[in-house]
Image (cartoon, rainbow, N blue to C red; front, side, top):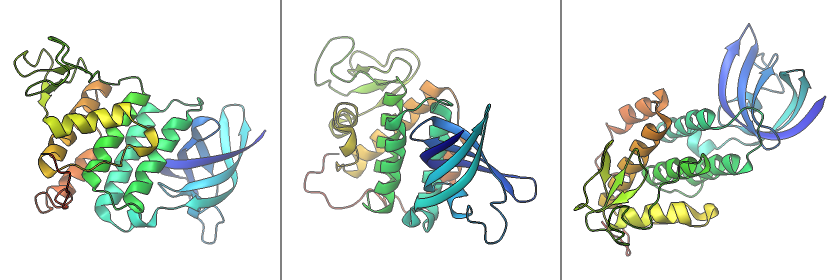
Amino acid sequence: MHIKARGLVLREVNYKEADKILTVLTDEGGKRTVKARGCRRRGSRLAASTQLLTYSEMTLFEYRDHCTMNEAASLEQFWGVRSDVEKLALGSYFAETMEAVALEGRSDPELLSLILNALYALDKLDRPPALVKAAYELQLLCLAGYAPMLDACAVCGAPEPVDPVLSLTGGVLRCGRCGPGTGGAVPLNAGALAALRHVVNGDSRRIFSFRLGSGGLARMGRACESFLLTQLERGFRTLDFYHNLTAQAPAGGAEAAANPDRRD
C-alpha cells in the first residue's frame, strides 16, 4: 500500500552500504520507522529528504509492518538551524525528546506542529534558544499528559504564591512557606511563573511569543528541563552535548536582549 505523508526526520542511522533507517514523525501515522534505500549514493533523489530535521512530502510503501521511502521532496530544511552549531544541537535534542514521547503508528498532529514551530522559531524568528528550549519542553510534556498545575499553591490555595516553587514529581505549584514537598522542587519567580502559565494555558501557536529577563528565563529554563527529565525518567545524550556547547558561551548571551516589559 502506498501512503502519501508529510514528515520530519527525527533520527537517521546508516544501514548497509548506501541505505538509511529513519525515524520519521508524520502527519498521517505518527512516528514511523522508514527504510530509505540508496539514499547515500551520489545523486540520489532521496538524499536531501533523509537528513536529520528535514521536513518533506513523502511517498511511502507499507508492507506488513515495514515502510520504504519511494519518493520524497523536501519542504523545509531549516538552514538557519543547520548553520549554527548551538541551534543544531538544540534541534537534535528536540528530535530525541520527540522520539521518546511520540507513539509508533498513532497520528498526533499537535506533536508535529510543536517541533516544526520550535525549529521555525530558532530558524526564522530569532528567538533566544533558551526561551525556545524551555517553552518546547513544557509544551511537549503538556501534550504527553504531564501538564503541571499552576493555578495556585497546591497546599494553601494562594493564586500568586510568595517565593513559588515547582514540585518536580507532583507537577504542582507551592509557596515557599508551604515547603517544596517530596521529590525535589525548583524555585521560580514572578516572571518565570507567568511564562510557565503562558505556555500551559495560552494559544499553542503563540507559545514562543513572550519575553523574559535573564533571571526569569534562567529559572524557567531550569524548571522546564528538570521537570521533563523527572517526568520522563531518563536523560538525553543530545542534551548533554548541548550543555557542553553552551557552557562555553558568554554568560546570559542569548537572554540579555533589551526588553521594556522585563521581569526578573
